[in-house]
Length: 59
Image (tube, rainbow, N blue to C red):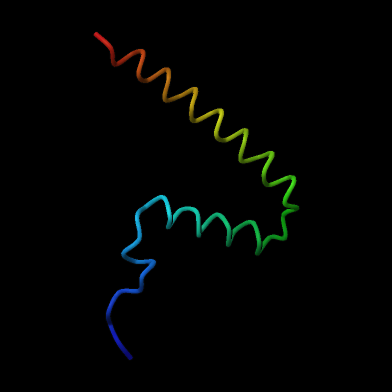
């Protein structure tokens, strides 16, 4: 058996996270519409936090 890293091991962090999220959603049989709605909420939350951080980081 080879000890060389898989392509996923060498993938960017966002790709690794996406694969993990897809696995989590599929293994828990989350309805695709529910998953997309939840991901939109997460996206809005993260964007709000990034905007707030950018505002507080500005001198």
